[in-house]
Every structure is written in C-alpha cells, then in structure tokens.
Amino acid sequence: MKTDIKNIAVILGLLITSFSCNNFLDVHPQGEVLGKELLTTRKGFENAMYGAYATMRTPALYGKNMSYYILDIMAQYFSCQGNQGITDLSAFNYYKNADVKKVFLDIWSSMYQNISYVNNILINLEKQSPKSLEFYDIYKGEALGLRAFMHFDLLRLFTDQTTNDGTTGIVYSTDFSVKPSDVISKKAVLHKIISELREAEHLLDNPDLYNMATENDAYLRNRSTHFNLHAARATLARVYMTIGNIDSAIYYANKVIKESGLSLISKTEVAGDIIGTLSGKETIFGLYSKDFYTNTKTDLYDATTMLSLDPRRNIQQIYNASEGGNDYRYSSWFRPTNEGHRFIKLTDKVQLENGKRPEGQIPGINLIRLPEMYYIMAECLLQKGDNLAKNYFNDVLKSRGLAPVKSLTLPMITNERYKEFIGKGQSFFNMKRLNLDIVNIGEETIPASNDIYVINIPEEEFNYRY
Image (cartoon, rainbow, N blue to C red; front, top):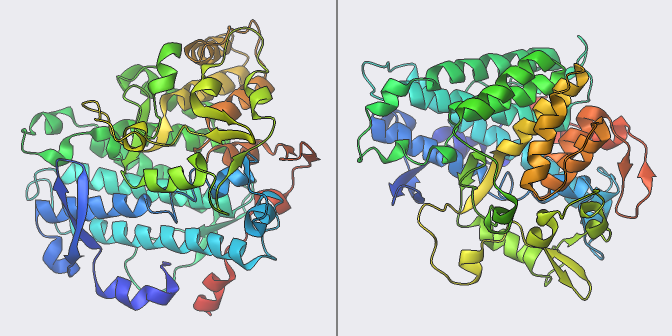
C-alpha cells in the first residue's frame, strides 16, 4: 500500500481529516481524530466519506491535474508558451524535467494516500453490519466504488495498453498500513476493479434503504456528488470498453441511459450547462467544489500567470469541422480574444459575476456525464455492426446543435469525444485505449507509442520499497 512517503508517519498515525456537513454540501475541516474513535458511528463514517471526496477534489487530483490540467495538456488541448514544464509535458518529455516528474509523483502519492483513507473506512466497516449501522450498504458501496474508480485511473495512466498475462499493473491497495504491497499484473488489477465495482453496484441498488431516509439525512441528498449506483454502472461501462468486453460495456452503458433518470441537454441549454457546475441533467458523478473556481479562473479564464493555459490555435476549426448545424459547444465554452481564445467552460459564472446561484445548482467537478454512455453505446454497437450505433451518436449530435450523420465511423466518434471531453481529463485515456496517433499543438502528427502513452511508475515508489 502506497501513501505520501514524506508524510507516511502522520498519515498512518491519524485518520483522515474529519469533516462536518453544512447546508448539505459545504464541508469544513474539524481536526484529525484517531480512527477507532471516529469510525464507530454513522456520523463518523459520513465525515470520513466526506473527507475522501474532499481529497479527490484537491489540485493534485481531480481539482486540477486529473481533469483539465495535466491530462488535457497531454491530450494537446492546451499550451503555455514560456513555461518549460508545460512545454515538455505537451511534447511528452516526461523524465528530463524535474517539475514534470514531480507532478506524476504527486498524482501517484496523492491517489494512494486517498485510497488509504478509503481503506480505513472499509476496514472499520468490517466491524459493523446493516443491523448496527443504518446506511451501512451505502457507505460500503460508495467506498468500494471509489477505491475501484481511483485504482482504474492509476492503471490507465501508469500501465501500457495491452492486457496480456505478463503485462505489469500497479499496486492494488486494500490496507491502512506502512507495509508495502506488491505491484501485480494488469489482469489481476482489472479483476479486482471489476469485482469491487460489481459489489458496489449490488450494495447501492437498494431503493428501500433510500426510502428510509428523512429530511434530516443530509448525506443521502445530492446523490450526483456521491459515488452512486449509476456511477458504479458507468464506471463498469468504461472498464469493460477499455478491455474490449463490448457486450458488458453495452449492458452497463444502456442501464445508465435507461435507468438513471438523466437526459441529454438540448442545444439551447449548452450555454448554461456545466459552466463550472455539475450538470443538472447529465452529471452521473461529480465532486462538489466551490474552490474549483479558484484554479480554473486562474489557469483557464485569466491569462495572468505562467501557469495559464491557452487553447490550441485551431480550436475553432475543430468545433466547426462538422457538416451541418452549429456546434453550440464552441460558442458556449470559449471566449475569443485578440490573442486567440480563453476556455471558460469550467469557470463558475455565479462566482465570477458575484451572482445568486440558481436553486439546486451545484458548483463542482464533473467526473462522469451521460454523453459518455452514448459514445460507448455507439462505438460498441458499431463494432458489432449494429445499425443502432448511429442513433446513439446522433442523439448527442442533436443535443449539441449538429446535424445527424447517415453513416458512422470510429474516427467520427473519436472526434466528437475530443470536442465533448475538453476539461475532463478523459481524451488522453481514450487516445491511449485506441492507440491513436496524436496531432499535437503544432498540428504535427506524433505516432502512437508507449513512450507517449505509458507513464513510468515513479522511481520513489521503488526507492521506498527497497
């Protein structure tokens, strides 16, 4: 099990930072408490889960690096002239620049640190049961789902595309201990991820339990900000498509589409949707975060520091390349300037304009949205030669203001994913899954290779082990 090496004694001597819930979503640090004292009550487990979600939204993880910053620079959405670290990252020079090496170490160590927090929740849940803890199944389902979700993103980043018997994987951490765990095969990691996601699905598929909740049960509200039933199914669809099990990917993506109660927005809603907030219609799983605005305004909206990101020069052509219709995403997500464009999709307009937030709108980070399930359906059905593939694809095109296609190809789906997923940290993983050549910021084609797509496990991991 791996945690932040420099702080390992502190991490394991104390439980996670405890959080209380104010107005159902605002969480504030209350201090550090020993695990055995905290994780004995319902409030303790809920505070611990809030802590795990809070760590996920930090800049080292999905509050920056794993959403719009590191992974999207690698996907060639953004550049920053004069910043050598960003330039090297965009050029896939991963190991010569100390700043670039450090950012991958930060991702690795922060993710395993948070996994250790979740492990401690699960270990303490073993001392409880549905009889002793009212919402036991929900806590355990969320924790298992989060553990699998985080391991899957580590696997996608730090291993190669193949899944042969000998393909090296990562550590699958289930302990809250200083004892190192072994790096296991990619197949073994995937087996554990799928197993835990399916167990999470089973635990979270319990309508009677949710019906027991009263208006005082704040933890059970705003389920899109928790790893919920549909998040488990959507993540399973992601995993199954990644490993090429298209029948299972279709099964789970279709269940989310049919049973989640979500729907694609209309083209006229694009301008007001997910501008720094969770989509009321499309978000399957996201993280509540008012602080996300602080980073996105500095890095994306403004152009005032050497960390500010400029969208690639031909971004307008990318969105206007489709035949027929008007892509509402371009006019909604970008602000033209004399120097090019600013990417405004992730900058919360309410905070930017000091306005009043509409009731029910949640500021935060979208991690899984409904359009992805439609793309999964389209790609998997296309592989099976099913004519219904283009129907799912056209549903998304229509919702974004574009004309339907009469025939469908994989490059069409890939191009649409690229437009839809800007700011999400998903496009690099999609390129890697398909082993695509990459058209870089300078519009040169870079051939696909492991040098681009595989990030080495940080050397500090092995220095610590041995």
